[in-house]
Length: 185
Image (cartoon, rainbow, N blue to C red):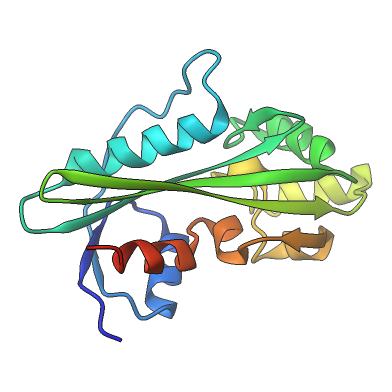
């Protein structure tokens, strides 16, 4: 089934790879927006707001623009991208032996109208030793990743279970995007 070409409001190579793999044609126009979470802003509201802000920041008439934002929630708190090595280690210690949620806000904008969904996936990490955490952080893979890990990379060895969309954990719930493209877009 042919889908319309979209504009991806993101520089994420992971999102681009997921769209390509799903056969969704797109161009990239990066949205530069403040990604600071508001005090007491719930994680689902946060990713929905950012995805909408990103899409609207680059939207042009007669285009379908896709904005997305992903975060990790562990113990009810948002664990965004690590700010340094110690922060990455702290996040991985929180994830070790625990369940967490990955939330991605997805917004499609067309002709000034927006449609936003939030996808949630539960992920269970295996226990990680301090040596494993140090090794993983040293690999550089946690850099610039929500929750300090990439499920599609080296961190896959620490994933015990997943409930929900795998592509959501990578950074874009493709089945959600596909469904949204079919709803009047």
